[in-house]
Length: 204
Image 1 (cartoon, rainbow, N blue to C red):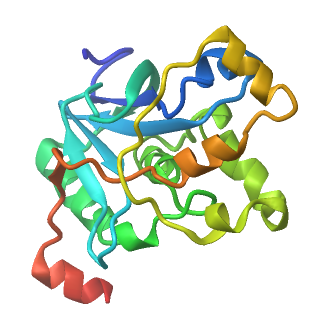
Image 2: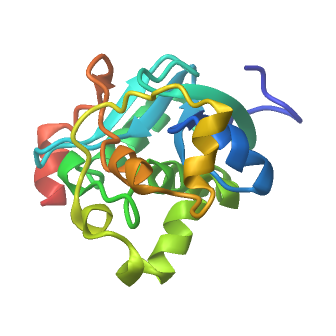
């Protein structure tokens, strides 16, 4: 993607659907999304696993496996060179271990927001992480599985028909969606960001 309004490397937020329900919820400013940040020709995201090592990974832009690409949002540009950005992302990766993933307090959208704030001084759009922001105020009302669990495997999305929507008319997020949210995980065919040993030691 070419830079807009002058020089610098483009910083682009790529947003993906985590559930087919987004086709209905998106137009109301709601939805359940995964996001990755695209810089210098690669996309970086954050996912869960069970080990105390980085959950930050890189993939081809707009191609994060396991999710359905929805749209991209231009966030601005950065003056960081490719080498400077690589050093920055490796440093940040040490602060986002896979076993620290939490749907409400430390998810993929918190990671991309952190990157955007550092590179462009802008936050990602509020609608991308609205579920987490609402949950932070009403955490005591959320099912325990959402409050404390990390994700286990890549979600598989069943097809939704119009008749299926009748079963969720009383709630925007039903029990099946709670389970699906609790399964957002680091995809298998992505490249993890390796934190240099010396840097990892400094972060401990």
